[in-house]
Structures are given as structure tokens and as C-alpha cells.
Image (tube, rainbow, N blue to C red; front, top):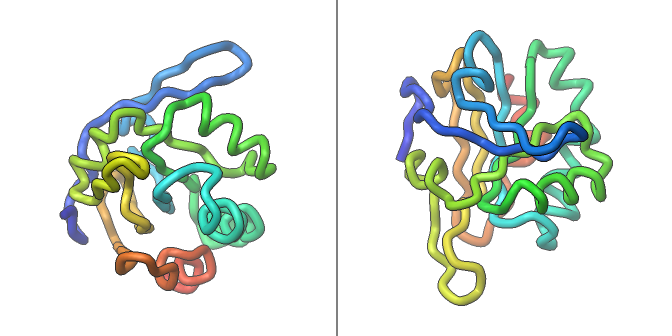
Length: 157
């Protein structure tokens, strides 16, 4: 598992925009920025949709006031699902990172296998990175939602 002080692994993410499909790499997303990244097991799932993402939406301005350049939500879903979830949650202030095949989540060492329920997914976690280096890392225990919520990350800044 990635640890504090390590650089985030290289990877690419696809985004669906008004101009169509766009791809950005981790260098473009993290270099020279202070970033909060939180990961959810799946878009449109109960805890993720009712508590995890909404907390970051509500507190987005407070994160920006504390010097955060970007808030990223990571999920092992495709870019179309992440776009639809962002729209359904009015989460325009959050950049949705679709890790379609889970390769970046696996490179972080924070993937979990859910079998026939959903296959490969991200563990629920959050981190603070500066210039692509992990400064703080909060990984939830299985079935918990206690340390990766928006209020906890805001307090950690």
C-alpha cells in the first residue's frame, strides 16, 4: 500500500466533457498542486452517494479556502458513469477520476476484490497530496466510514 512520503503512481484518467473524451495523466492532475483525493467503492452506491461525495460537495469552498487546488473523487467505474454521478450529485467542484480497469487503484495498493458483487473496487480512503507526494493517508477499515469523510480531511489540513 502507498504510504506517506511516497509519490503517487503514474497513470491516465479519462473524462467525458462537452468536447468528448479527454485523457489526463497524473502529472497534469497532481504536479504543482495541493490535492485532496478520496476514493469510493462505487458511484451511485448508498454510502458513497448519501454521505461520502456529498460531504466534499458541501465543503468544497472550505477546502479551497485552506489552499486545496483540486478535489478528486476516485472510483473503479467508467468515465460515463462518473460523469453521470457528478451531474446527479451537483458535484461540479469535484473532479471525478474514473479508474475503469482499476489499474491505478491497484498500483496504490488500495484495491479490493468483491467477487460477483462488483468485482475489483477501490477501498474507501482519502489522502492529501502535494506535488504528487502523499502527505496524509486515511484508509477505512472494512465496512466503516469514519476517517475518509470530508470533515475529517478538512480538519487534517
